[in-house]
Image 1 (cartoon, helix red, strand yellow):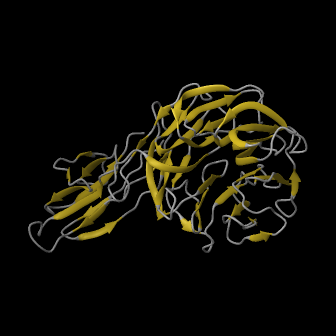
Image 2 (cartoon, one colour; image 1 turned 30 degrees about the horizontal axis):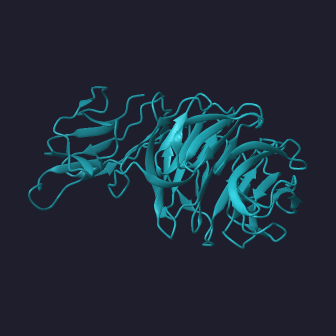
Image 3 (spheres, helix red, strand yellow; image 1 turned 90 degrees about the vertical axis):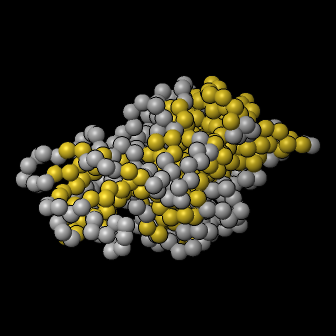
Length: 415
């Protein structure tokens, strides 16, 4: 991997500042490191393209990132969006804007949306096939619905085996071709009271369903590309459960926590799961072991590691991750990304007032761990050396230097 740098030229006055490109790094060993990015908003859902270059996040607006989550752009007007899912290439979207509203679809990366009046209302979860043609959604207290034409028409796939009086669906996921579907319920009404929810799977695009005797207060479910490896999380609090045979058998993993959301890589080996008002955990061995990640301070300087996570997403190879926080009640939070190395912005200015007048001040964000300031007096040479005198105030790293001669500075990160 190329070393990413930022260089600034300083003479007696600031002449220029050059921003460097973004470089990608893969977390190796231990838990993932997460950084807050994007707008401060009530985030409710997040989705990723297969390559992890494109992310979508739903809040009052749909926001999009085309650089693995480093920068975000508002993509659609305010509808109070609640859910978003996308095709593997990130061009086809399916979204919902909350209770008592239909599904909306887009074929131009979220620039415009079409209302699908034939869809059910009060949707809680949406999943898409890789090509975006096959869609599946869960409507709590109703049924699972599928579409084979990118949301134009919907079929009520009645899930009933005579044992239940009503299922409070919470999450759905499907294989890459949309043939294998898994749906989980938060709870189930069995007269005269509610009990823990169950898991259902389908191997024929929702035509028929198999009920699995896996009781739990299921909050989220994810599937590998072939639909063989599944992972579901129990928020009772409960455990994480994994299956390697398309849902026939399940194995309990990790410890009891209020698990809120889970996502899977295409091969099902790399998983990411979030705890509500807790931490984000990752696994690189199909859920056998889990490691808590670390959050860098957010733009407000908050160092709290336990946040109200709402949703997580990951690329097909499991190296690029995204998570969103939302505590409910109109509260706001940030989008977080992991696996993308963000090059911090190096700022140079010459103060006009004491105590720093007649000096040049170089700054970059304090939360940018792993970066070292280097200097060189001649850009035609490779004689870069660490800069001494760097300090911080808890918000920014900074160096105060007298403008003597030509000085060149860069931030360097190990490959």
